[in-house]
Image (cartoon, rainbow, N blue to C red; front, side, top):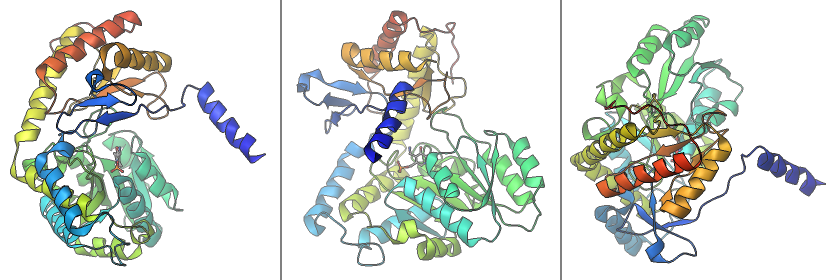
Length: 409
Ligand code: PMP
């Protein structure tokens, strides 16, 4: 009976076109963004255009060397949770370095960015009596899950709409605990939130602010510390959350905040306490990557220069980059789930371009898209090849071009 019930769930997913198939790709060290497809020869490599390794740091020699050295010295696993033997010296260095990056008193590292959102929000909402949380409608699943795992009242505001947020805030008594949770760069639309305006409202209505900077850190702001740092207003955000899996190129999540907040999360969040800590090699790699990104603008400067070139090339070709995009994330609108899948297949098989289709429920039906990310490692030749491949595939499947435009950023 159970097998039947579960099989039906999969059947429904398949019927709605939402069933996920993984493309197995093997990144080639030192040759990123090239990767091989399992079962194919090395000379049949593909160019990856949809990785969150935004700055290519997963392959940086300083980062891989740090991981290798730590494995030689400490072995592979961490051996326990943070409280029971899993706090090694690399952790202490990483947490102080992250706190310094965000101009905060302290930071706390989790095994994943997902876990850091989920565990922190769950913990705060359980500890703060009668707290209402105000959440942007496009917030990531890890934020939504953290909220839903509590009984806290949740008011969802329209995406980036500060007037709507204010309408919802006004409804609550001023002395009742409140948290506003939002992201700085939204990963599917590539747009940026009105961080300053949200901080103004938080002050006016006595709310804590929690910002997810997962898609910004490494890429924006002085020393790459993100969008709040770019505006010079980190001090107005109570909790800055990030990941080590994207711009930093490794894995792990974190929050940076005041000593009091970090101590509370460290002491009460079950998603932090009851899980094994990251291995020394991983944390050492994070340290090496973070130190490099603090000291050097090279990777982010090249990223932004190449994003500009790609954006201009696609604009000139009439490939529809969604207007929302004002960052390194370039969403290309396809608008139909099946076409998106078919186009991805043709891009891979005929053009050796790997772009994963982004379908519902990740994005609304009718806005199916490719999420294109150039990195500092992509060459200008690869950019032109991508443009030509997209033109061919758009023509083949009758996907709508937009009027050619010279819009640049
Ligand atoms: N927040 C946002 C906005 C994300 O997009 C993601 C992952 N894509 C996460 C959090 C989770 O981060 P991680 O991959 O490090 O678990």
